[in-house]
Image 1 (cartoon, rainbow, N blue to C red):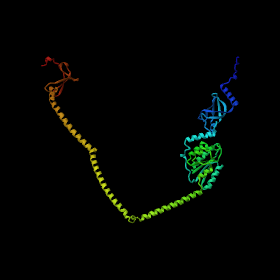
Image 2 (cartoon, helix red, strand yellow):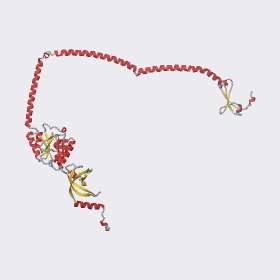
Image 3 (tube, helix red, strand yellow):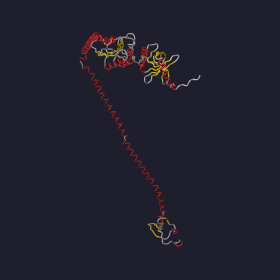
Image 4 (cartoon, one colour):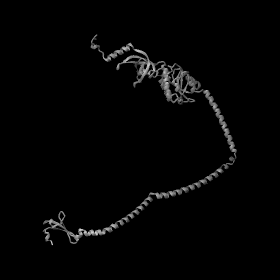
Length: 454
């Protein structure tokens, strides 16, 4: 069977198709509760969580945006079985089936109990519950800080106990909600404020209630505020059996606010009785000590040395004189030894001084200089003796000596060329004639042949 051609107005774009399917899913399926295991848990930088819910037969992508995620009472993670509520829809950009969740609960264990156990394990691993961090309570606090509801029974019980046991104590109340949304932040702010005020001790608590009612004292912000406080803190949440995380981190845990007040202040009458008892003991001990010392003083007065006190000084004086003599002798001996040592060192230093070494160097240089002069004279005399005969012979062979015997040298001017033959000359040439003593210039008039020269 041949299909009919589609009309242009019947053709959908991919985006239109996805939006139509998305609208059908949201209207037809809508919001559902599903059960599954979390895997691929990832929280983006914007605080949104992206993960997969799966069981043995299938899986589906899920997202929980930051607002819903922050309302959870537990920390989700991979492998956790949960019950989740949300809207079935499509992620238009990829066309993927997706659950947009607005609520999630652990499967099996309650969400609050699971959150309690997980946060307890985390803080315990960080060492917040260790006894080494616990601070001792002051004996007689003057200012007591209380963080609780101003309208609850806890503050009335605390004030009643304090007035009854020790009326002159100053109580500073920081009013805070003790349950509901935002209560944990108010409690933490109260702890930080009273810690800065410098109270001597702090009570943080409320009356009894369910786990949900007491949950503010399990919040991490409250636990960390108690741990960071420099003031000793008593956790006084009104329950006997169960513990909150504030109980673990506090310096002391009281089962009720009234018990916390009794821990903070002692009974005035009991304190006065204790002070009186210690006063009597102190007076008796002081009297006994005075009596013993008086007895020892009387005994010392009767001693024969106290009757003749110079006996106490005689031996000491002799010992002092002996020590003085020994000290003088030792000083003289030591001084002589040091003086001899210094003289030896001075002589050695003089021999090693730069001036002495320089004088010795000068003397060595002068001796070497004299030896060099003598050696140079000796070495010059021998060549001088050998040179005299040679100088005589050289003088005999010198052209000047020949000229001295009546000969002359003729040079052509201006080039001063030596003339060896008359044939080298021309009439009117200018010549220079060198004699044994002096010279003369002449102009050639005639050139005579060799055979005409006698």
